[in-house]
Length: 190
Image (cartoon, rainbow, N blue to C red; front, side, top):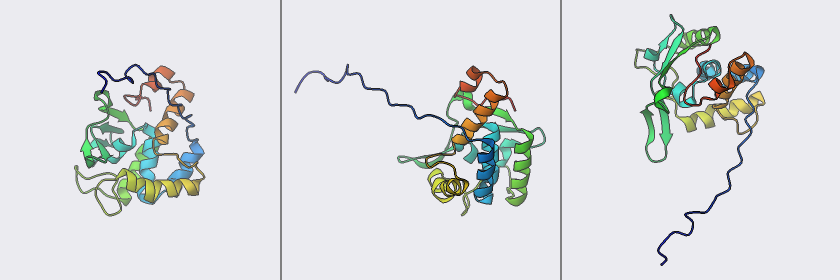
């Protein structure tokens, strides 16, 4: 036995970062048409607000104010090997926020709630086909990946790409890169 760990001062090579290619507007539109109807609003809301997938899955009716065109991020649905599926707080303290909804998001939410009504304030906005909250792995396997294939979106593209799409639109329309690159919260410009 040696008294110290010889790996303590070892420098590991940095993992190469995967190049992020945001979805184009037409790709988002096609995705919204190809995904099962119960998730069309999720795609449009994610692309127009930059909410994280877990934040979208964690939305309940009490979080959405269509009259004032806002959505409050107070929780997220998480899935881990250790804890399974659970409702937890947003990623960071700054991730608790109220996000303005652009017209496309308000329209998408109205259509979604008309087609998939929520029973009360604690009801999930987006639900699994069998009821209850959306579970990431089931969503990916049963809805997202098949829709990506039909829409011609590259394999390996996940729902976080909707957040990148939103960020790229903000930059294109004049938001500062510094504001957009703040990963702890979604910029609030509609």
